[in-house]
Length: 483
Image: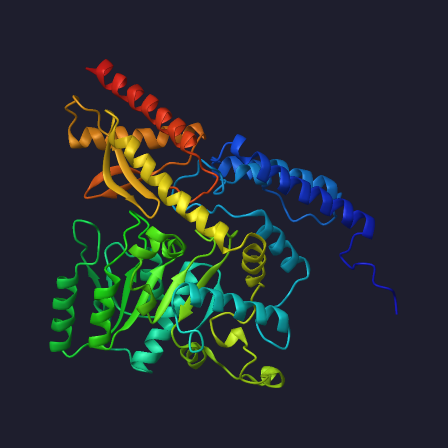
């Protein structure tokens, strides 16, 4: 038989040289990212002009391909780890976890079942146990699974809640969430086949917290109409404001009404490692399920979400399937096959980066970083309140601060203030010097900073605010010129 020469391999020397260049590029990026521009801008036409081509029939020198990618792809992607990336929820990441991901991918480890990778499964069990302890969940009875992110964790949680509370018939089931709940929950509800009439979006109060009395009224009305309240989604750290719902009160309602209590803590749950965060998150341990996103405030690179549950059997009872091609690898009950605990069969080895970074730095360093973030946001709030130019719209909460340009002595209308702040955001992003976008609070256009990067300094924020003031003055001068 003719020898196969198409093995998709480089020589050992070529692989080493290639790998050194990749590592050098990553290290250089980590060490210099504060000096780079955080924002990437590009139209479809511009990107097409760089990348659009037919799949090449013949190969290209690997060095040439790598240099092209470093020059054109990496520089045309917004850097969510940048100290001046303030918008959405940044992804601060850390180098040890980046290298751990490289190991997991380089060894191409399948992390679906015990038989394929007992060490990978064991590390997922161990790191999930670490998280169970951090959040006060039952050590023996509790369980969980790492997912791609909060969206998949929420979907996994709601699928489990439906199975446990409704069985096969969910035609009368009703689910409750607030108007500040993350959009991934609505997406998950739609994916699961619930109709619009089965979703109750409860208004929040003036502090953007779940309105408890309105919730109680809604549950009572649904019961009287013969419906089945089965799940409530609370939020610990809303994306807009960092607000934590009244978890203790909501837990009591769920217990009394026999409702599954899911907490979406994708953003804020990690704050439990700080003293202030732990106080705000009181009641989080009472959830039936909890979403956490390590690729946010646990400083892991994308992708890494997590779902924790009070009873691990609820996951296996929801997701276990027994196809004939897996019958030889079931193992014993202590050997967890994580494909039986979630949606994915094929899974990458996500636990490794969490494990290696916690082992390397220790939880103490994570606690210090999170505490720093919370205190930084409070310092920024103090500065804004002492300035004649700025108005704090919502105070610093779990490292999120909402504010707007509203100078004392200027009688701008609400519409003008909205336009000025929108202009500030657009110009800052266009300048590529910072990623700072707006949100809407109480119908007002406001600027929002999420300060969870431990490498973001107060001076970096001050520089950004000065830039904002520059564009605010530029806009107001335009108004004056027109008149």
